Length: 320
Image 1 (cartoon, rainbow, N blue to C red):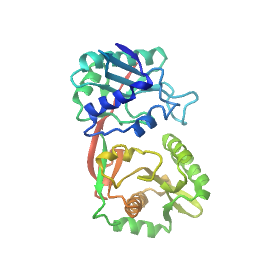
Image 2: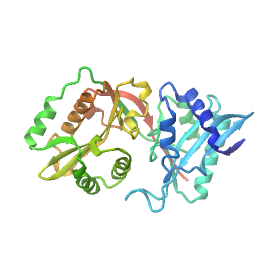
Image 3: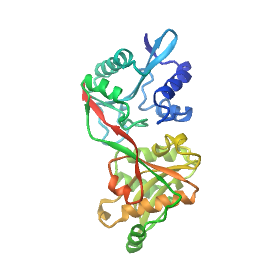
Image 4: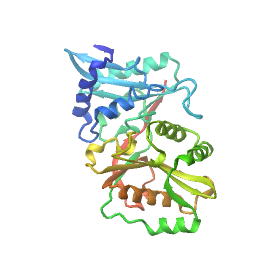
């Protein structure tokens, strides 16, 4: 029986998640609530559905849609998301298909033109986990097309030392890298509005609302301006960032970094790599022992700092 989610379903849904994805994607209650009800502008509680069989939840689907007006400047108002489609192993053809057909029909009825699996605001996954071939096959049989490969990268920091190239690039520039100070917040947001006016600006604004200080956003500064930024996450962060979603798999001294970016006017001078290098060094100094860079295709860039692939995802989408 397909029915609306109930608040009392939370425990059953978390247990179902652990059975399906828990080994590689260990979800806890804090992340669950942050990414669902904790994002009321996008999460559609009215459209979320569970599939119950014999009094037991055997499947669920979570949908997100852009608000009106859109949350950021280039957010497509006609693009919606399936945040996740979760079913018991082996139930893709009946339970999974019913949930997927419901999701597409509900979004189509509301006038959305396209649906994407994952990659949603407050996402769980950038796409379909590469190991979940059954889910990928279900989506593709329903008309979804796969595109490319996104990856999370990981590094143990025990042997990390600031790369010489990062130090030399920063020294040559005359700029500085450090935690954002309260008096720099306006300059940081102004930089993001000019250089990255979409999702990264929005996510930075949302994070600054919940953190006690802006210090977990590092800034590249010089000449009285902010020229680059990087989010860092660790045990003390109030916001659970993508790099630390699966922190149970990272150990107690976990950390993460991203997004990260520099002004287009400075590219080609090694300052993006400097920001990465000093960001990793900053996390090591905070006691992080193992960390993740999330959702990227830049294997060579992060590889120069010793990061290796950890988790992989294939984006899927289709027109409605």
